Structures are given as C-alpha cells and as structure tokens.
Length: 174
Image: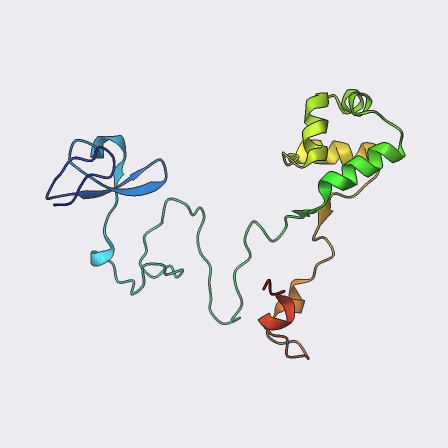
C-alpha cells in the first residue's frame, strides 16, 4: 500500500500536491499543507516537459506571455542571457588585489562599509558576493570579478565554420 510522502501513513488514495515547491504524493490530511497539482491527462500536451504553450495553461513559474513564432528556429531569450558569471577564481582575485593595494581585511571592510568577516569568507571562497558587494569590490580594488562579458554565444551555435564536438571541449578524468 502506498505511503504519504509527508507523514508516512498508509493510504490507498494519494493526491499529487505541491508543497514549498516540491511535488509530493500526500494523503487527504496532509494535502492542506499545499496546493493540489492537476494531472496532465486532460491537456493536449504530448510531453510532460513540453516547452510549447499549446495547452494554454500558464505554469506557476512563468510570467508573461510566450511569443514563440517558430520561424526563426532559435531559442527565446531568457533572463540569464544578460547576466555575467562570477569568475571561478574570484576569491584569489579579491585577495591579490587587496594585498596589492596594501589594505588589511579590516581596512577594506571599512572602506566598503561591510564586515571584516565577510571579506575573510570571500577570500577563502566560502561565500559568493551578492551584486552590491561585487560592485563595491570591483570599484574599490579596480578589478573585474565577472567572466562572461566577453563570451560570445555564437561560438556554440551549430552553424560555425568548424565542426566542434563535445569531445573537443570536455576534459576526461581517468
């Protein structure tokens, strides 16, 4: 007999319910903690993970309307296209730039109006800087902490002159 994924009670009829972003199979008493998920059997979508807007239903995670004409063959722009990626070596960049300016961690923290413990955590790589701290660090230390401003997505399109494969990019760890 199936069990409720929240309380563990044996129940023959469980309901798909979304609780805090997770979809769970819950008994009748636990369904009050979330909202019931409608099954896709009544929709015309053929795939569970369909990205088309043919069903006419708007999922909770999307906002705005979809304007996919289908004639361009490309993907629709999303919010991540305009974002820069934090450099993987941001911690060493911060530390080297701070040492080059001969600031102590406490002096840099005072200059940025932040806590010295945050500077220590950033230099160890324990935390990621939020956008405002990143801008302060870049301005005060005259460094660039983001990588990706110079990356061109057209390099990865299938219409390049060369025939690059995944094997050309991936490094094997044997």
